[in-house]
Amino acid sequence: MINLILFGPPGSGKGTQAKKLVDKYNLLHISTGDLFRYEMGNDTPLGKEAKSYIEKGALVPDSVTVGMLKNKVDANPDVAGYIFDGFPRTIAQAEALNALLEEKEQTISRLLALKVEDEEIIKRILERGKTSGRSDDNDRSIIQNRIDVYNQETSPVFDFYAQFNKSISIEGMGDIDTIFDRLDKEVSSI
Ligand code: ADP
Image 1 (spheres, rainbow, N blue to C red):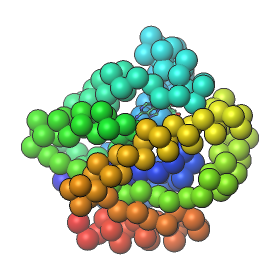
Image 2 (image 1 turned 120 degrees about the horizontal axis):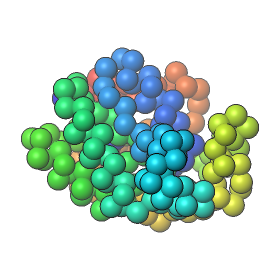
Image 3 (image 1 turned 180 degrees about the vertical axis):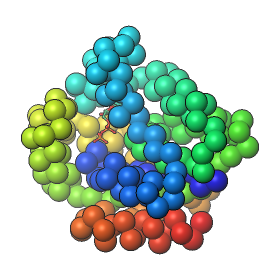
């Protein structure tokens, strides 16, 4: 199995690239952001709880996020591997993911981190906000908060997997296909 973490700040292109990797490697794409938006769209108790954090650009508490992720993984055991997108976003989530995969005698193959400058991120998210219908994509201060949370809480997850020589930094500026080729070079060598 190939189990990837697609990593990088909000708006770095994780979702776009995940779709292309799914097409090529037939992996299951698990985006915690998409899962939360699905729950919010259906106005479930989990969705209602998540909404209060997401609309401020804060992280949803680990216990809620890990439980939701675990359900999704457990519901899809017979896959060629997983692409985790937007997860783990804290060290505690990384530890929970390790434990979950260990139970299944699996492991993370690589963490692929897309590097994109802050200015470009803000530009991309505001552009996406015109059509995404996401309230967290329309407001500069919420976007800045998401970037700050990424720098403070999420970026240490890169170092966590670097301890095991699994973290790879990828240039995330450029056109979509060029960035995909950079990612694909790493995945095809696993
Ligand atoms: P982006 O990467 O563009 O910020 P996502 O769709 O991945 O967007 O996430 C949107 C929001 O959902 C985040 O700002 C956060 O509030 C919440 N969220 C997503 N994944 C997680 C996670 N692993 N832990 C906590 N909160 C999360």
